[in-house]
Each structure stands twice: as C-alpha cells, then as structure tokens.
Image 1 (cartoon, helix red, strand yellow):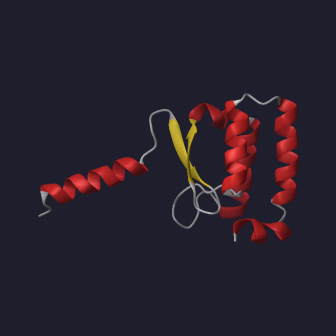
Image 2 (cartoon, one colour):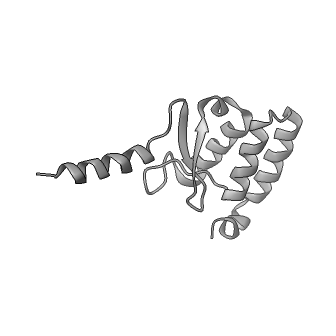
Length: 112
C-alpha cells in the first residue's frame, strides 16, 4: 500500500507533466518541454513542424512524446513569432530557413 505522503508527491509530479488547459506539450530535439496553445497548431509553421517531426521520428519519439526536429533556440524563436502574430511572409521565410537547417546533413549538428 502506498502512503498518503508518497501519493501526494506522485500527484504533484504528474500534474507538472500534464499540459495546462488549452495547451499541448511538445519537446525540442534537445529535450526541452514546450506547452503550446492549441490555437498555434492551426498555423502553417506548426503544421510543417509536425510534418517534419513525423518524417524524422514517426508519430512519437522513443519516449512516447511528440518531439519536433528543432532545438530550443529555434522553438523559442517560433513561439515568439507566433505570439506576435507574424505575417504569412515571415512564417514562409522561417519555414524556408528551417527546411535548410533540417536537411539530413545538418541534423546531427542541430540535435547533438
């Protein structure tokens, strides 16, 4: 039987792993956790990131979580652009640069 103290500790740990209401959790290729507002999933940038993730890692990575094929710095930049309602032109430029970064020859340098 599990003690009430241990149960409370586990509960706190699990609550920290669950996304807040209206968010989903994704990870950068270097393991950083990001809570993404569900509205962002409808953007061109996230649709493309999820497509690249599926090509690179399959539906989920080895840990059973959605891992995007970019590092923390790129994810923070993407989140910043989306928070500021970047224009479609800026999103396309970002995607073009990301496609070059995600090229298989560069992937090892990005995620190592």
